[in-house]
Amino acid sequence: MNNNPIGIFDSGVGGLTVLNALSKVAPTESILYLGDTARVPYGNKSKEKIQEFSYEITKWLVSQGCKLIIVACNTASSLALKKLQGIFSIPIIGVIEPGVTAAINATKNNKIVVLGTHATINSDIYKRTIKIENQTISVISRACPLFVPLVEEGMITGQIPQSIANLYLGDIKSTKSDTIILGCTHYPLLKDIIKNTFQSEITLIDSGEVTAYYVSQLLESKQLITDNKKVEINCFVTDSVGPFKNIASKFVNVKIDSFNKIDLK
Ligand code: DGL
Image (spheres, protein in one colour):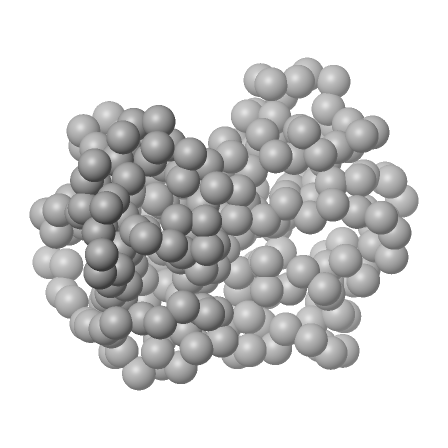
């Protein structure tokens, strides 16, 4: 038993999709969420910067007593996870491997599409991880950078996001891939738009959702589950609380106990 909170971090609001998923599969766990809103987006930053920011955040979450940390940000999972795991002794879980496992289990024709930020796609981590598991799977990777600001603006339905999805994904349709990994925190909010683009049976893998499930299993196997009577969900951001709070109401269906601004330096 361990009653300490689970830490979740992201470059901004997107990781709230993971917070949401985790509070569904592990409703008795307290969560401490950190969104690095002062430095978002990570998706077009260098590996060095992403590692530096991820280190600062992880150090802070550890100092707050987190028993396990989820790197909800796909970009940070792609470029900083291994480094963090080498430095800190608590379990640190990224979203790549659970997403890959779910996609490999889902595909029937061995054709997987991976969508993510520039940094995630350029790291090639999804493709490499898939190939380690199964050489015969073909992988098409595509950066969809405009999806993030669309979601931040709440533009998740209608013509504008649909046109952008068609532009990014239109040519992938002919590959007849049957599984898509949504390799970015924000993309699950565009599920309907992405599905429409393909207009055929396609399985979308929400990497945050499968990671939340994976973590709930891990807590049990490592005997880290809580017997807390009082569940607390507290959010911290590195810039003003207001805009985060507004967007949070669109992403999250659970009660958040507090919103706070912190300075990581
Ligand atoms: N959280 C990032 C990710 O999942 C998307 C937003 C950003 O670029 O920082 O890759």
